[in-house]
Image 1 (spheres, rainbow, N blue to C red):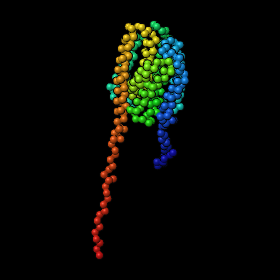
Image 2 (cartoon, helix red, strand yellow; image 1 turned 120 degrees about the vertical axis):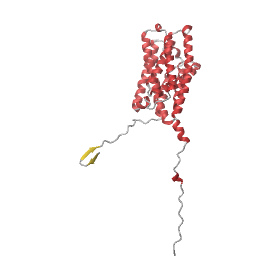
Image 3 (spheres, rainbow, N blue to C red; image 1 turned 30 degrees about the horizontal axis):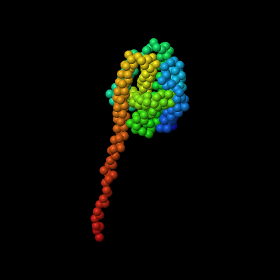
Image 4 (cartoon, rainbow, N blue to C red; image 1 turned 90 degrees about the horizontal axis):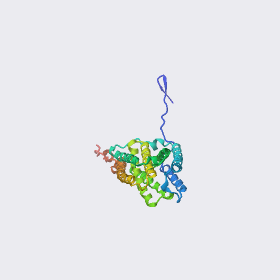
Length: 301
């Protein structure tokens, strides 16, 4: 396209709007979650010993590194095909409620406090290296799945408060599949509640930093300490198990704070939507004015 200004011709490039290859939708946001649940249910066996997960080098490789690594590759290919990387991993609008940073910061403190309880000599160095790789794969996969792709889909249909609830609840229910892998029902129910609460803190980590990297690292750091303690500390070692129990109770209190803070952040984001529904646009006075015909004077005969 050319526009003429006097004798000179100036080429004007057409303006192109950036669009995602595939528009966000709730169905596409839920699809990988449903697929992962189906595959996990198919692979699980009631005879599996869930309690031995991550206890040995072979278990770390077979139950964490390989399956989670494959899951990460498949999910990354899915996000790439959709073109959702910018919207699944980045929040352009961060929350301004800085006091909510307390919950993720205290969870990081809990993770650090558990490291001295690990019996580092009980496993070879290669075990801890592989465990770090495995939990990093878990963090990338589960966060990209729930705080990434699922968040994009939920935001297509729900207000942010509903997005927060939906992402936390579905993240918690995802852990109920552990029953099919040999976990006890009562323990799994507690784990589901814990995971749903933890999901709120991970949601806060994304909203505070504006990207998915913070919840990925926090998730991986938590899993590393949890598995390393259970794999190296005998249950009869009261000198180490009692501090671990106290740290666990403190973690539950912190997660309660995370639930409250996450709800406040999401509710505050929907304030404009609520006000828009409450207050209607008032039409101008001119639109309500009634036009009155002026009286006509009698014409002269």
